Length: 304
Image 1 (cartoon, rainbow, N blue to C red):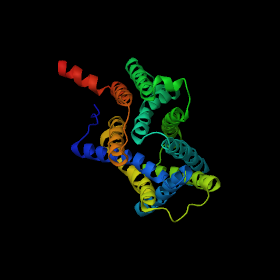
Image 2: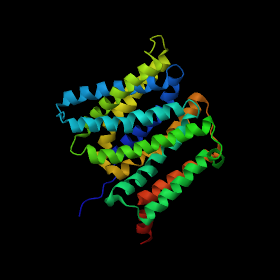
Image 3: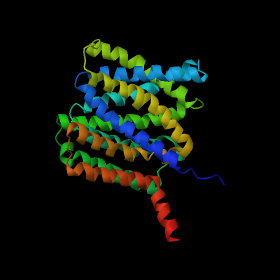
Image 4: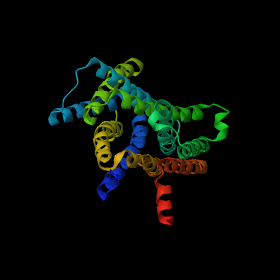
């Protein structure tokens, strides 16, 4: 029998560190947007992370693929996992608080289960997973507010943009499973960021022009954090936790990112969220726990 993956104290520590890093990315986005444009922020993030990861690949002596098919897959993955979601999230944060953005981003796991069930026969929806998806979507509706679905203003459009980003992340996971098989995670991440850089940098220059150099330290510090910490380092940390604890345990990071972003938004930006946002997040978390199934397994084993 294959041993079940579990979270060791070290894995828990690194999972919490990853949650703090990604929770901080929402605050960094907001600080960068005070002086930089949406597309300039995204371009600087992916280009900086791309450079850092290729240096890492070179230092490790990892094999770089030469196939045109693989590089086309890197381009597609860069669009789905970086350019589209980063742009939608960053644009959405022009209007909505960082904590709310992080809560809506937590729907990625719910949408990922749904997309995988549609595309892959070995990830079909069981009754439990379907119940979890339903609870999760109920949480999304509560977070946004039912009235926002009837009257589309800038705020509701920004929230829908965050859901679009979550859907793009979900599709990226399915795309990677098919297109990037057999690659080391570090090379896959560096190649993906190369694809996103090739799109994001020209797009930023076309729409917003070359960035000025007189921006303040807060803006450039935020961009440096986004590139070096929440993208390049976070990818390396992500794959370490994946190897130690497995994909199911790693998915718990989705539940931990939002509280970090909420606290940072409140402390640094003095943001406050409506009560329905917290209620919706609780439903989202419950949906993810139902999908994961561990709580039910622990309960049944405890009752036995």
